[in-house]
Length: 95
Length: 484
Image (cartoon, rainbow over all chains, first blue to last red; front, side):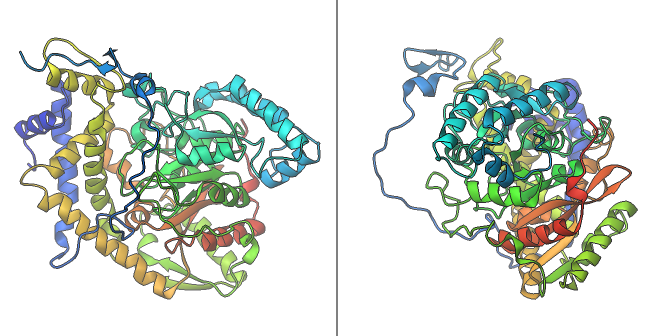
């Protein structure tokens, strides 16, 4: 086994996904298969190979720090599930 | 007037000559959508009234001798593009009520050049899929055979074209999501070089692989559309500031004297005989047109799918962290605090494939596994990219199949994620290398379209478009349309 049920539950917590029993079971098997498949990369010797994060080599992209109009409060909040007084509302964080 | 066999340029001329109007073209597309989309399910949102109003305005501009090469042409875009004031759901329940507050640059450029937005096109949720079966809006069906998939993830973008619902569309391609549906539906699809087209306003899946591109009914339309959307955008710092050639002006350059490479790893045992035969016939056509055919090797091809599914899922797990039920999207909240609200919103909002990829990506990035999975995959990505760069020292372009088979049946691969992933074996390496490629119709397997893939050097879309046009001029495949 490449991955255990406990590890799947741990990754679900890291992923902020409340998975049900059936999902955890299905994912344990599927992730095990997929992780078994990607293990084929270990056949390759990559010692000294520079990793590619981006296909087009580029340095930091700088721009002048000009002040420009932004999206505005109304449009920024238009899709919020819950907003009040110009703020996003979330469940209480601190008791 | 029937426009089904007319290119956008010819239609523009007809508009300028007063032989038709943008309102008539738009009306014809809307009627086609009304007549066929109950079966195809390519559109998730149709902007009928807005489209007709924009078409009337386009007609006024044309009458006044104004406007550009896309003025009055009805198009549609994948529902991954933000379109100001129009619902943009990305195939997901979690964004089912999301109204885009601004335009994606690629779409804004089409709109500025006068294109008419017919609506938004169905897709696999967050562009994750190869069959368009992972959509919260239900699957898209292939216009050539309603029992079969249109390909994914830009399945709606390809199926809408094949069924005559729009004159051109935009899609996105992270591992083949433009080329594979173009191939399955018998249309032209271009995946430009990474950085060629702005990703600003395109909902992100895997940021180092995602690229915007056009789908079209012929190579000329694809060249016109690519020219319209390409170019540096200050709002996307990964877009590249290099000149965009006039793709239309050089389109008829032909392939005489060009070196076309056949990567031997792409002509494998698993290739369907009908696909193999169609691709071999295409090679013969290129030989007769004066191209030199050379065998080349891309030795790391077999590792591309594994490499992709680590990099793409890792990037996805990070990109999709933003869907938390706070600033946009659906919120589900039962008992509990903030973290439970995140967990419940995401659990209810995402479909199975998206959850699977977030989980795999989170695992690959998690403490203790990063080096073994993500870093290893990035190193293998270097080897895959170097394969292409070495091949391009010998040849001008590469020729391969797009997919090992023609369109498969709905439900055929849904039970086995790995088999589904392996259907992208010929398209994924191009995204990892970051270079450009296109799909064009090159044959049929008992009525089902087969696609030919041409892969070009980085930022050399012009050469593959020329080669595609040369093939198209010799064949009738692009003129075939399904009976729907």
